[in-house]
Image (cartoon, rainbow over all chains, first blue to last red; front, side):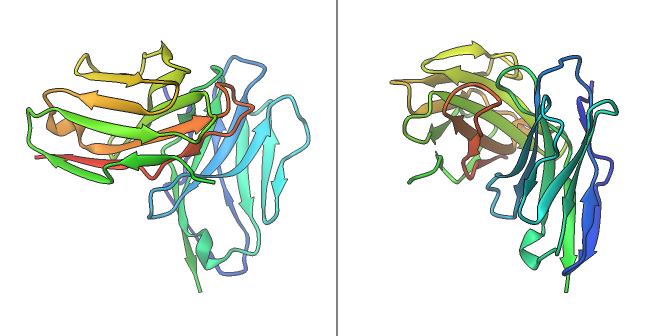
Length: 113
Length: 115
């Protein structure tokens, strides 16, 4: 069964604009972690942002922020002031087993000048 | 400092041959993970090591797949009698400990092509 769902296979945003990537997940655990990873063409997975489920405050890292809705099991990523270097595959991931990451299928983000 | 390294970067092999993929984690990281990324299946967890032991091998797709970790450091993933469906990018990651509170750092992956 799909644990993490990213419903947007592709998204496009203009440089300097804001874009939101969606992610929903399913877990019966009350304590877990959620992540957004970026994968550029180099294949290197890079952690963008992390959210602990027990924290109500949404995580923020510079231009990246999340909207974490625990009851709705939703974890969206907002990228502000988009830059050409933000173009990549973005993966939402859930960790609720103590170690293994469960990834969504990914969203390909295109940034246009 | 040095990140997670993997070798080879690319590997082309004939169906039926055995292959070994290597992962060198960040020094001091006790936890090590293997994932597989393929077009059809996305990113799948394969196996997790804590130190030299593998508490969870549940993600290994068949008994043709095995992995070991020696000295709490380098790990090798071995695929015997490779099949075309084994073609994928194999990613290795390491973390300070096996818990979601610690970031998993990924290597650049090995792209395996089975012809």
